[in-house]
Length: 346
Image (cartoon, rainbow, N blue to C red; front, side, top):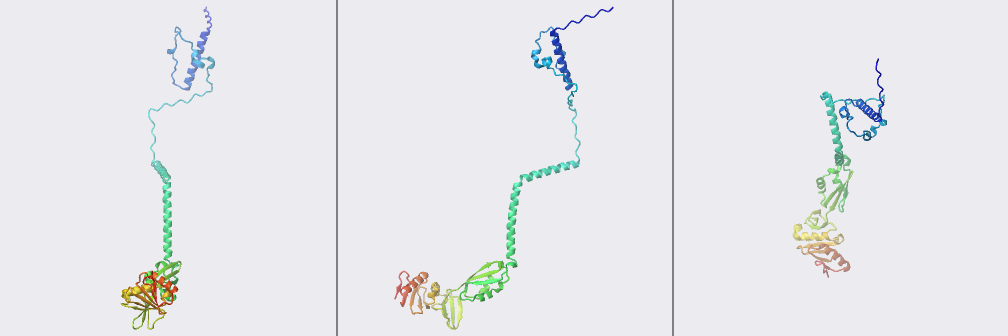
């Protein structure tokens, strides 16, 4: 006959508390193993303190983890976290790139590099393009102007002669007719000079182009100072001795020049300067001009009055003083203006 098992004694409150703490640690260890496999258990049998050792109460030092009501049970449908793959002992090797992939990569790199270069040089390129545009515009204007100036569109169609007094303007224009049809920019000054050389009365001239088709020749005539008796006729000359007119009969309106030494002498230069300085109205009253030396120029008027001029110096002042004196003291036979500050009449 079997002996009946002894009735287990009831556990004390301290034992029940120790069992609840042990169950909680077991749940935590099970949860850790599920979430992170292979994690070592921080609580091993070596850490268990024997019953004979004096220990402090566990619950006050565990905080909320030491209470049985604070344990968080693991849900039944909880999915364990993905295990962290262990690093491979041998690194994986990439497959070698094909030539086409290398070409594409190189092309993309070059394209990116070009884009960066264009972005950083945009301002300088804009300035360069602006300069090129301005230069091209200036060159275009210059080329267009030169081309138009030398084209038949700007050919001479009308010639006008201005400044003539004793000459006939139509005769001078006819002499310049060979310039008709020539572009204004190609009108030759030498050709015009050669055409005007047939007119001794013309001393100087200037050319004025009036686009698109007009050419103006502005002339300055020589000033006749008198005429010389050459024995066979009379020659009208200017202050430089240039022959302006030759006639067998004595022409009207010109003073007779009686100069010792001819047109090449200093006396003629002084007399010519005096006659050229005289106002036109007073010059027309002179009948004879005599000069034996440059300091002895004398004038005889058609009225019979005689003027002692002296040298050719201060001729403009002497002419002005003579006009005033003759206006305020008319009818005298002699007017001496050789010293314009002290005029003598008699």
